Length: 167
Image 1: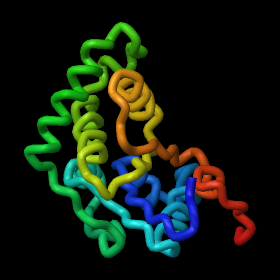
Image 2 (image 1 turned 45 degrees about the vertical axis):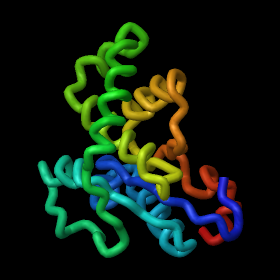
Image 3 (image 1 turned 90 degrees about the vertical axis):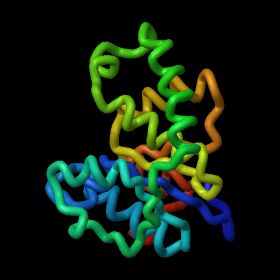
Image 4 (image 1 turned 135 degrees about the horizontal axis):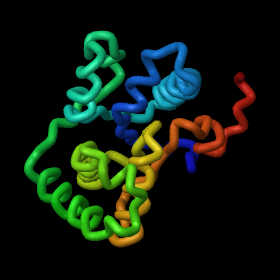
């Protein structure tokens, strides 16, 4: 996935932010490794104001390493795209497991996916949320999205085709 000189823009979702600040979480190491890898390679890290609002429910934004992130506000072009994506998701409810259709967070997932798809610099979306990945695949099957999904459960060296020898 990664080539020398190619710079990625990675939109980090709420799940990533949570794991980054919870050392006891099983995905904490992967979150730290992704952050270190992306910063060292000069890739751009983005965080949505939506993810920050979700994070702030139980954490303090001041505890995040905000110096590494470019804050992506939710704008009108994002709103239009989010409506289109949410329409796809809601029209395919019969293809979604019940625990996801009951999930109130779907609108926030589609809003952040819309931000990723609308922001030219964003090439990847980093999440720890498997339900968000299901929503992404559902949308991507109907309307190709211009970014790739990265799962925090996959170590960065596997996701980017690195050997991971520095561990």
